Length: 444
Image (cartoon, rainbow, N blue to C red; front, side):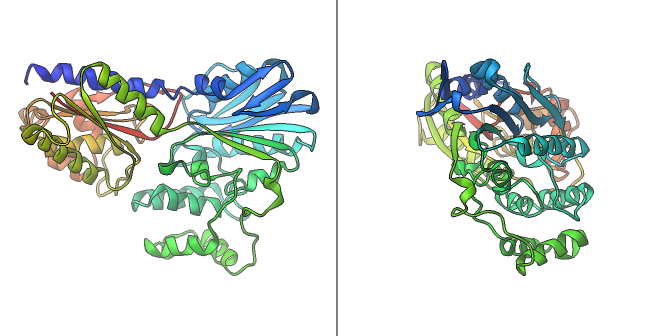
């Protein structure tokens, strides 16, 4: 291994963590929501707390606990009650908000209990109450309230089907909205006529509010017809549970009410603010890279597509920098953000960031002085304890020296065990935030 690689790996970790720190929910919440006595300012909009009988907090997402912690710090005793559901292990110290832990990305019974508790609290709200809704990545899976006639097991099956076939997060959320009692603006319909303030930590390319956590408090543009077109696109109609298939077909026929659209009166007493995003994290990562002496480029915060294909593109950029000094002269740092997908072809363990790193390792094999770090800003990548992984030009050679076949691990989608054997997993633990992924390329 080149002597420069250890320093590149250390730098890549530092740059990644600087990006994560920039979207810390507690700091972001205190920056966005400011209290001065009985006056509350939310992104420049003033609210008189004396007008409201109760102030509630509801929400869901991997960063829900830290968002609640930040809100409690601002509101103090003025916060009446709250219910927020987070992924297992993603906790933070709170005193007035009840935190429920549940499964992600496939919902479980604990998530249903959290959603029912949220519904009960939301139904208490009246016209003289104020409700904060705290949303972050994972909110869709962590707020499972299946439509009547659909069981949790059937909803789990639907989620798994679309994850396995490589459907985009937009497509998955379109389906989720139409087999749910809360998603797609339906939570806003539930709390009306209370005043509703939605605070969002975006984990969606383009920061689309109707997609983040499946948009429970904003108008929904999608329809039952869209759902059936997505089902047909992936040839899943025959594999859907009968109850879900019937529900979508009834909705398309006009026998069930659509999700509320922009003209619905339930949206007249609401404000929605994005308090953190992938772009903010990338900008902080760029600043950290520049401080360490790298010429730096943010290539995009909107990358989507198959993880292994995007990784090969980043590897091609590495070769271009090494051979021709384009688009940057070394030492160079190229930062990409977004959310890739993985089409499952095997039965291995991993996540999109680990798969990205493994594909990148194969593509940069033999290229000296190059490191790729791919990590999820929430600290977890797929159903693993890793945020992602490191790869460099010697990763493949090191693996083969241990008797590991990188191509075979990639074919089986078993990137976790590959990087575990090399001790190259990126382990951060839950970070308390969630703004998609960062892919950091360093060329020394």
